[in-house]
Length: 127
Picture 1: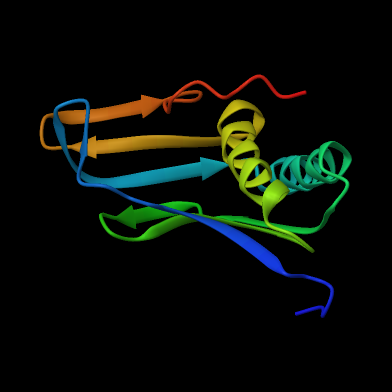
Picture 2: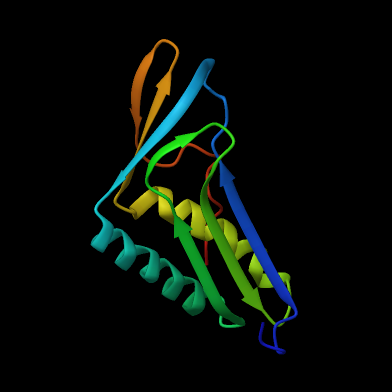
């Protein structure tokens, strides 16, 4: 860790056992890998432009079969101070859901469902 970094904020997305009243058995993620890597890098660049105090961003998203309880995505944002790292981390997960060519299929007890786009609470208006 660079000695100038006083804060690292992380987000870890974990496969949960339910969604909209359905019992989830597992998830399947598919991606266009080359494009997904470029888009994740783009998101990192966007963060560094919007929050100049941020000096490092790391985003990793798994693909393939993932059981309940497994980690599917990890985001880490580093800066000298914590103030920007929280907003930047949230921005990263919302942008992944918005623009990354990564698709999620939920396999539930009552069927399979492809999910598209952001499903979490609306993102704040970014300046």
